Amino acid sequence: MESVRGQLLIARPSLLDPNFWRTVVLIVEHSPDGALGLVLNRPSDSTVAEAVPQLGELCAPDDELLVGGPVQPSAVMVLAEFDDPADAALIAFDDVGILRSGDADQPVTGLRAARAFAGHAGWGPGQLDGELERGDWILEVARRQDAFATEPRELWPSVLTRKGGSYALIARMPPDPSLN
Image 1 (cartoon, rainbow, N blue to C red):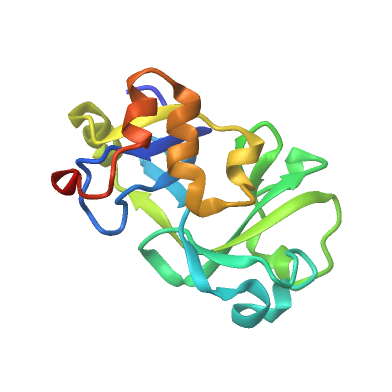
Image 2: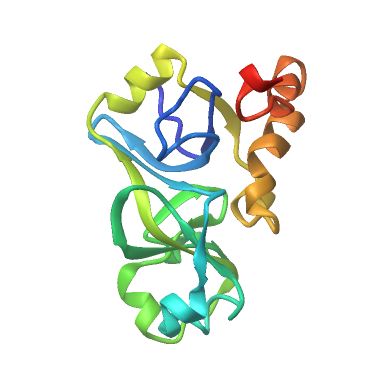
């Protein structure tokens, strides 16, 4: 299957796994060896300043720490918009990518935006391909405003509405359609 790096995975309503129910995941890397992504719409109960004070220079003090996924929840990854994409450890799309792990401990320049994530989403070889073939995810090209959404909780319906057509109807679906 072709790489979906730089795209959003939008969870279909039928994807009931609590780690991914109604999530929007930015795929940062997708190769035959597996895939890595960040859940963009799951704020934690902590701010970045409370959880990781050393990131105070990169992120606004009141920025929410986002839950990037179920893999390595105690590890923090920083998604950033770079002046020079060559400075990133991984580029998801355009100039948006992952900050090199050692960079967070030293003064960092050349970032236009940054967002911190606890954990990430990961797939083994062929696993994401299988989920895509099964129809668990809706694909959409990622945009800067998705990666740094001011209202992360509203990203799932927002991206589906932007996609239009029947996806806009899905965006308005109640969490439990049987109660409708």
